[in-house]
Amino acid sequence: MPEIGEVARIVNYLHKHLVGKTLAVVKAQHDENVFGKVGCSAAEFEKALTGKKVVDARQQGKYFWLVMSTPPHPLFHFGMAGWWKIRGLETAYYKPTKKEEPTWPPKYWKFTLETSDDPKSEHAFVDFRRFGRIRLVDCAAEEMRNVSPLKENGPDPVADKDILTEEWLVQKLQSKHVPVKALLLDQANISGIGNWVGDELLYHAKIHPEQYSNTLSPAQMKQLHKSIHYVCSTAVGLLAESDRFPEEWLFKHRWGKGKKDASQRLPNGEKIKFVTVGGRTSAIVPSVQKKTGEVAADVKKRDSEDENGVEEDDAEEQKPKSAKRKARDDGEEEDDGRTAPKKKSNKKPPETSRGKRRAMKDAEAEAAQPDGVNGSHEPIEENTTKTHQAVNGSETPKSTAVRKQKASKSAAKLRSEDESHARRRSARVSRGAK
Image (cartoon, rainbow, N blue to C red):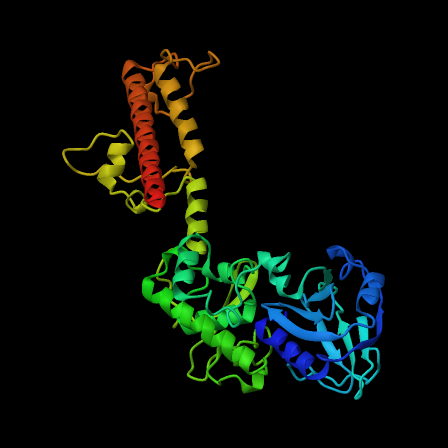
């Protein structure tokens, strides 16, 4: 997607080849996505621009517009793959993989403009993916940034340096609890930062893209402010010509993902990895961009463990039990201080919190039942030896007492674990609230 630097490139071309000229011919072919989704039509566009003079070309982030001699003024957004072409000139910010046929109007055109002045200039807006948008804004030229959609967008890092100060950025970062990369990509916060620019400035600031914005230290926020202005100003100043970007930039080495024999390393040998943040693939250098605070991935993992009844603090409970402790928990008596003989374990897999509560209730109900009957009033089948049973098959008083003792201890243990889980969860919620 064209970002702040790429849009600045086109605005530069417009100043050179369109501003000051009169539009003699305007042709548009209607596209319900490009025109229709923002309340415009090809016919309205043609009528509004034909015969008008282009007074200026301006930009805010990823938006740019033409200031006409009289309103309305056309406002453009390239979307994912839109672009502006000028007949006889190469406006692309990259070298095409294969040379295009010099046909006019070009493929996927949405409108074309032709000036009446000499030398005549011909322009076209193209968009094969149809995510671009073309609007007509009926207001005074100086009010363009005070009406929708521009007024809903944040300051431009290059045009609005007096607004995007360090103090402004600190307040913005601390007021939100979102991954810092997602905050930067949200155009309502800052205009013009897209995926590659966001990755570049976070690399220069040495900040992990998943880290929550309100966990950054004062030093990190100060450096992030510097990196935003450095990367955006450089990209705009070089008109997004990547061949002219500094060699140490991440941009120059990040495009090897999925390609055979691609190094995916910086010149100094540091490895480039990829993670998904805010629905976008992010390039990072783990050796540089350390996690210094809570990050989204860690929170998701913890929440998942909570839902499954597994706590982060359960390391002690997950340790293997000693034979002596196991015998005590199983209700077996120790033999003069020696451990009970080992036997094959019938231990079930760890249960969820809900499963433990159900087991606790069942154990309590069993302990409270009359001797020798279960809930269906059928004889209880115990896997005990004949020495613990009477001749007629019923339990002896001793075996009944052992069974009830086991059930009681099991219920108490489950109740204790459930209360422990609840206390830890409550403590964690309290820490998060602070």
